[in-house]
Image (cartoon, helix red, strand yellow):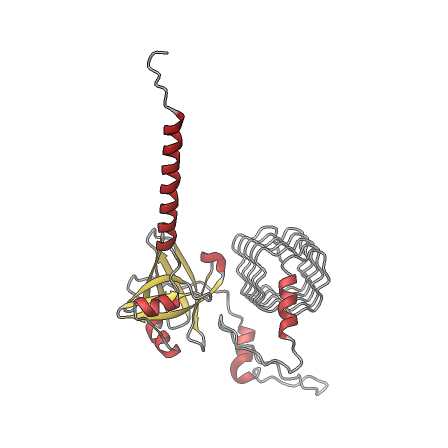
Length: 330
């Protein structure tokens, strides 16, 4: 056939062998060059030192960090109030909260970015560069400090209307003077309002009988336990990302600050469960029983509550952005 050139098979085999060898070499080189940077390598190659809590606080409080990673460059302003204001190089913005733990971790929680997860980092410093290392000891961001609100990110955040009744009761823990009822009985003193907790919760004391291994096993089992009976189980701060708990009995369970991102809780019984500050973005709560449950401060970003029962549930300060199926309340 005119214009067609026949290539001998042995030439094709040689070229394929060369191509395979080249791919192998490139793979080894890429793996060697792309190995994750960790705390030890930073200390060795950059002479970086971990900052103590007081230095981390001085670094961020009232200042801006410009953080860098692959495809993610963001300015974060740390206001004295604990508010966090973010803006990336594409002009996307978000707000959140920040704190510094007693171990010196810088903890951030944004309303929408990073699915609203609570993220804590050790901070290492070498000259004018700062390194944010995650809980696994792997470098996630490098950062530069900019003095003050360098990108004018601060803005007033609309809050819910304040209750006059609660504010006057909060003054010195007493209600305003009033005349006694006709019967002469005196109303009991109201409880003092609870202060707003920070995003980091203090470690609670454990009783001597606590079994740490047992609690860890239960948390591990709960990741894939549809229909299980986990009533009154302690799952506080459990990592249950993507867990399948459809139809499970979690009545009265302690899920405080648990990470239930994209978890399947369809038809689950969560009556009187404690989900205070739990992370539930994208969670499936269709038909779940949340009667009397505490969802105070919970992150329900884009969660599905279609058909869920919420009688007596506490949704104060919860992030309800993008929630579907939320019943209209009078």
